[in-house]
Length: 390
Figure 1 (cartoon, rainbow, N blue to C red):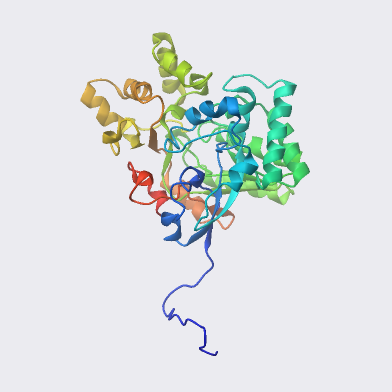
Figure 2 (cartoon, rainbow, N blue to C red):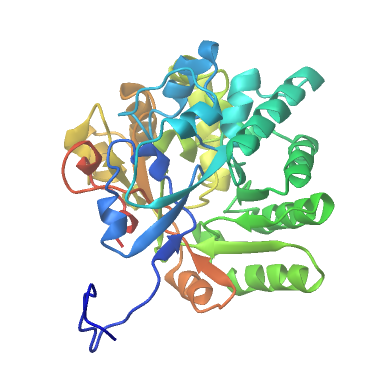
């Protein structure tokens, strides 16, 4: 080789490979503030798929901007929201150090069409969702994501999702789903995803597949067998996982979806009602946490990012409860009231043996479920999940 114009790098005892694709991230919440994507670039990640779990920052209709900002405040309290369609949202995205693949979120579509109401959509509302979905796909979205475990996505039924799925199929688009439940009814939820893929005919990606809650540990191989059998029968379905035993979510999402019906103010009002708290406690004792199942104790819930109470980052709910002389249940609900549901937590609810079974499978992709951040500035606040960095 001529040395003219060439840089020669000694890669002895090194690995040379293409940049990694992180198939599952939420960096749409941070890239506008951290376009350098430092935590991803330093890992060798060069492409991110964003807009997952039903959450996307667009479309934002003029009359629903405040509702979307309130809804996404536990995940993106630092973002400024304004009225925008999906095409304008993409056009105004900053230049980045990584490639991005965008999804439009079902929760966002439903919020735009019918708010936080727990009911099936009218035909007019469903058509509104289909129209917004088509606009996003035409603008360049790869497909739609769903978060069927939490409001308002959890208020949807199979008929609603299949209707939107047919719009995806017509556009040759993809569907990425956070299952309706990753805990006590996880296998029913896997079945729902497989039936969707078979009926609609679009590729389904089950994101961050897991068996959450101590009652459900040990089922990884069964889950993989179900998906493998479906693929052998021509069903287009796959999954990815993150290699950690802790999840992360807004604290408010650990409780049944009815708590969030009609928005944040209604949620805060419910938490001031003794009857509602009693109902929540009974559900928790019988079933465990929403989506996450049963945890050993409240030490398994750790504050990650709390915009209004940053001094608590890194502390557990059990620790804070002991300090106040109350139990972990009341501490968690009081915390939701005090910060209006904006806090994110880490949830240690996954078996390492299950994680290892998934990781060893050639059929399972790795996706971080993290954000592009840096250990300074706005994105460096709190005690984030380690998956943000590796």
